[in-house]
Length: 151
Image (cartoon, rainbow, N blue to C red; front, side):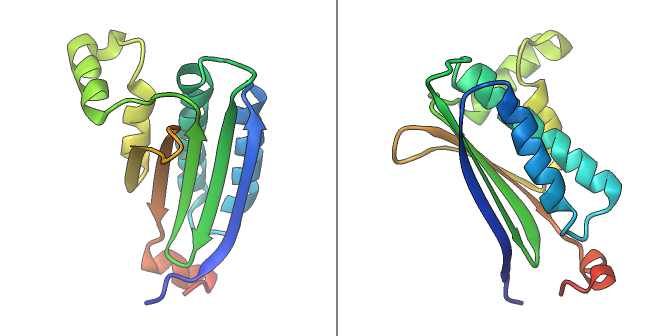
């Protein structure tokens, strides 16, 4: 089955706490176009908020001169959100090691554990420009697509 693109939005924002709210407002509107349940939409918003918050706090170190890029693509089969910041990023091993050594008392990494539980796929990588990007995906189940007529 072809994975036809239904909607695509990309915005660049100056690094601030407002980025979290702006991204959430856009995502909330776009999620209404998807066949996800109300609970699945809410959980996906939580996951995306964690990623945007991490970009603001850790990736860009709250520097107002840096930018966060928020990109959302909705296709017939999934929703995909990509958040890019100007930080150096991390490896999955670094997060796992920190979380395993500090457990619930870890000062970071819990948000990404939440994202991993909610998202079907998470990809963290360095961009060709040297920025860091996190992409999270949620696949639509066939019964969801049939109920909403998006097949």
